[in-house]
Length: 421
Image (cartoon, rainbow, N blue to C red):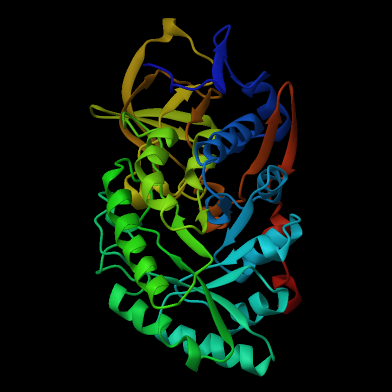
């Protein structure tokens, strides 16, 4: 079994380290299961992305939905990022982490009236509308608040992102955005909407996209729309490319950020406006691991099982998407040999697994396993099913680490229920 290729999670004397810190030492303090993040990875990924587009006026808005821990958001804010928020809760988190409203974009295919009001109250940079009806509602709410709303329209370019159907968002069959004809109609209503000013046009065609061609096709389509509007005198300040850039989980060969920039920069330069990016997974996925302790091993006929203390409640992606996460031992011991096994959790669902038919080092009670590429869509999708407590989160910086979220207590789970007994 080969370790996952990473310069941030490496073996030293057969012990897995995050940066300079032994993972086993972190688990001694934080317990298991636990999420561990490399701050250096966050920083390096952001700086690389930012540098790739230095030729144009641009701004990165970190997609908080991928990992909304306050310390993670704050790390990107300190690097100069804005924040893309998808709900009232994410807006609350972004503000708590120190984001200024002018560096926040409010998105979502189904914003509530309250969320729109909050966006206007805080005067966020812009609200992205995803339907004609939503535009009318934003206009009405802004009028009632005696405000003018800055609005961008999300356009669905009907491009196949060639990704998992659950995370494809740019086809006409998907729920996101409006088609080009509807977008033109809405933009041309500018003079009728007294409490809206259109400032941008937006796309987001999906997530975990490992081919550049869908991005090029979608950017070309949206750029054409942008230039049509410009000829009609509708001057937009922002062109939002969205996110969706894929990373390596298994044997994918994703394009580099420099290759991505080289492919779309010629189109973007012709627009003469600020270009916005919304990376999430790209900045966080391979910055994190989920460490889990082996509870039991067993064999049913010819099938091997490794029962770990992490479950679908801690990392949902394998169960919901059939997603692959490389799993490797925290303590590498080549004398143990390998078996093919399912790595499963304690939750009472057959869909509770972290890996199936995986070649993995033989394990025994008390061994630690590292589930790789878990920095995005891990903790944010965790739940309390079976009354399980969500894991702790740890941030490593060089040779030190700190808890950035304690493991939940049983009191957290009860919250105020006891008041109603």
